Length: 245
Image 1 (cartoon, rainbow, N blue to C red):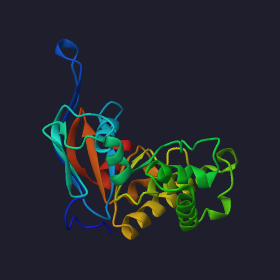
Image 2: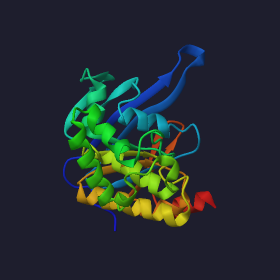
Image 3: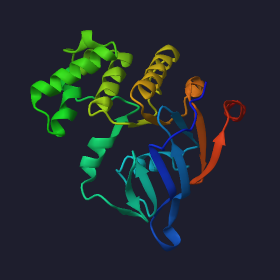
Image 4: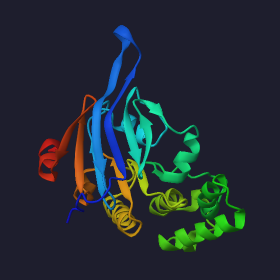
């Protein structure tokens, strides 16, 4: 059952646009995209290559500057008319946003625990506190028995669980996932999506995922389609299935 749109949105986009270049070389990557995502919702962004999905995810993640538009994250307007209202975007990302990538991007020279703990240390935690929190998260995600394993020794599913633990380290309420299951088989992809849904509910969080992975479409509350930089609006699982046949 889809999670209803109730309460205050955790992510609110108001006419977000992004262009690259000027004049004849100008490319409009996003065109006045407006979107709201609420607590406990797991939302997918779909679209062909070049439709603006990753650009939009990077703007929500405060990694890329938009050309215009406004954005509210977790009750705070962080962007107005294309201008950031916070000077320290790194701190903003640490405070409010967790990232999960297609390839886990774990640091190869750190074990599972320290791959999670390093995020907390960047936020100012001492190493003992950071490692305790990291261990608790790995236990929560049922991979605590691999806490001392190096990334090269982890299976694909284990590595992705460690990456999810890292995304949760600072208790963000907004989690952005870029193709989180593309490198996994159907069984492991389903397990990862079930974990993300559990996290959304138990942490009162919102999860926004860019994906092409048909085997997980049924795990989303809402599916939004991007075409040529425009948000076509909410689509259905049936419509997506028809298009991808």
